[in-house]
Amino acid sequence: MTGRSAISAIERPPGFVFRKGGRGIFQRGVARELHCESVPVTKLAAKYGTPLYVYSATAILDRLAAFERAFKEVPHTVCYSVKANSNLAILRLLAREGCGFDVVSGGELERVRVANRSVKQIVFSGVGKTANEMAAALRAGILLFNVESESELWALAECAAALRTTAQIALRVNPDVAAKTHPYISTGLHKHKFGIPIRAARELYAKASGTRHLKVAGVSVHIGSQITDVAPFAEAVERVRELVLDLRTDGHHIRYIDIGGGLGIDYQERGSSFAEAVRRYANAVMYPLRRLGVHLLLEPGRSLVGPAGLLLTSVIYRKQNDGKSFLVVDAAMNDLIRPALYGAHHEIVLVVQSEDSVTKKETIDVVGPVCESGDFFARDRELPQAKEGALLAILDAGAYGMALASNYNTRPRPAEVLVRGKAVKIIRRRETVRDLYSAEL
Image 1 (tube, rainbow, N blue to C red):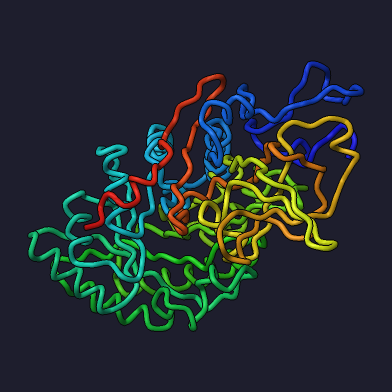
Image 2: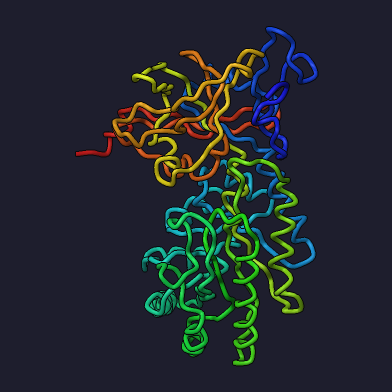
């Protein structure tokens, strides 16, 4: 690709771009370099080392603004899905913009409370909330519990009674809508562990309304993650609309509809505008809700932070096994597990590029040092030739990257930095090996 890189071809908010002294077209022998906003990525690597997670604050805020614009015609709250990336600095960034939060554990609730204790627009989802987690959420005064079973409903009622308070609830209904996504992140069918069958919801709402310490306030639905076709969203919300009409006939005051998250990002094709994708999504889900007079709760996670982050890594070795070529890098599956876990595709770009690096390609595997054959970032990928010591950027790693990182092979997790304009803030220091065993007895 002459004059453009994979990353410069992406229509995305300002964040990661290649820059050089000219007008973006190669001059012979002149390199161009990947920047995060106004900061050369090479400088970040030199100061903070690799592997390194790098996030663009501007990209996150631009993507949040796209949601706000798309849904401006209806009352709504964006409740960021904390599980996508739970770094406190990112939570603070979003809280300052008026975001609510979607949490799925007591730990995530605590993170939100540490980031901004004044935030009350919190919804608590998940199939296995414990009594301690429920109590913490009740004391925090959260907006809504998304209840996923009858047993959980009565446990919540008991907890609220013990605290002499009332829990505002929505039942998470399972609409039995198939979403075209990886089976591990599909949640909307009866065979999945999530939610209550929609046909059984009306009866359970009746039971809940007769309980003093529970207040029926909404309906929740979430059919999965990384969904790029808006039709399943529209189908699920249409079924929720029918349920809401039935519940109102039964006398319930339904104020909220939580349509979950799940809007996918394009990890590979990179042909469309994110703002346009959000508009299509908004049009699909708002149409069934017209004239219902509800407050819409949205739970985007990946779509806000995924493309706003990358994992920076250095090439340690080049290696040949017979006719097979490998780049061994210092990042590994413990740092970014998505390729090993889901077979996920992440674009990989050379951070410093020359004319030769664009024209000279090779088919190669990009692998890490962990002792597993599944420790790879790309297999049989055509990439520019990279020398030992070169820097590579693994793109779209802002979601479910650091959040899923581990210490497998006793590997310290990477540092994280957040860039805004020319300002760089380290938002997580690199772990040391001592950190990893300091809690062991």
